[in-house]
Length: 94
Image (cartoon, rainbow, N blue to C red; front, side, top):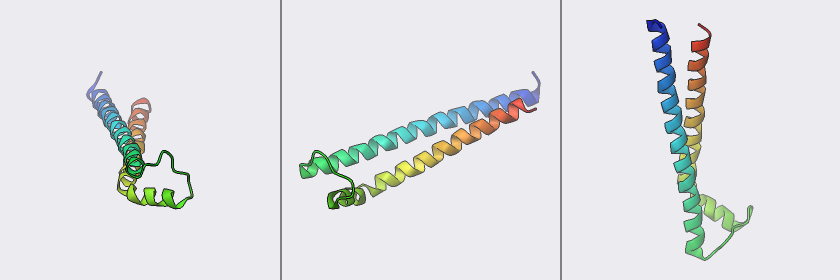
């Protein structure tokens, strides 16, 4: 094992940790959004909201900040997984 091999393996390890953290954040963001939906419905005494209804539109507007966090977390997770795949490809292509 030479220095280049160790450097590439370390890069893979770091990217794997980043990808795992990004996945954890995405799951937390999804849970927060689901919780926001449930809180919105509970506050109004609603069990279910049908899509494409005025209530749906109101719920989407009220939970937009949580949705935005989820979209960003999904993007970050996708990028972290891509960076991990790139690091692995670099390791195998040397």
